[in-house]
Length: 220
Image (spheres, rainbow, N blue to C red):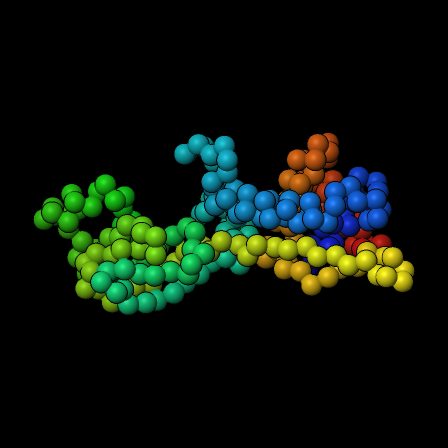
């Protein structure tokens, strides 16, 4: 697996500079990693900055590749609601599905639909046909008496850090204790590609992958 330091060396390799030339400083690179980490996450979910409903060519459930990329952030937990409230991880981000052992359907509704659903004899949630809407803690489920609700959702990626240390004797830049990106190597290269684009470099995504392979062959 590629580390954040590998990505930093690759960035400098791509712009034809060695690591000491510092195309961008380590602190700047750390900020770029954090920014593009979240942007890539939203893009994989189908929520990029330019998202138009129905027009995205990627997103949850669109391709197996996208779903595989998002696997590190997939959470499945079963809990008993407290007064109908299901509290998820503090960094929950995108709810996929929810169900019980006996439910037939589940419907994630907008809060503006709530009164219609609760007061309609036909659409009122039951133990077999449950419903919920999003609240700050996670979900508010109906009927509020149900137990053993399983929720599938994505949490936010952990914020990466990038720490470097200069050896006082050799003056070489070495890698310090850092929080790595949680993505697979393919997605890490996508993140690096976004950083390069923001730097104004005219490079193709395929070129980044080829240069990464070359750098690995030469010992990184």
